[in-house]
Image (cartoon, rainbow, N blue to C red; front, side, top):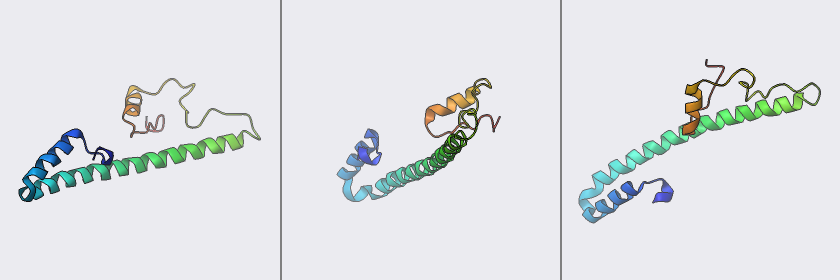
Length: 107
């Protein structure tokens, strides 16, 4: 069950519900519905992250291709280099794995 994303608390809760068998169906449904909603949220977040990563990779590829004929420019993905550091809100967003810093575009 942990491989499916259930916490130990949720697994224990499902185990306790199993002991109640027939009476536990509604509670099991609520727990599973809640977990499904969490998974769907994560899938959407990963989809956005995937799009951002793909866009950044395209930027890198374009810059590397451009460098074959022109002098190198700053990395388009790390555009804040040489312009100071990104703000604290952006640095904090990197920690959760889902927020993609849009600095300086959003600041």
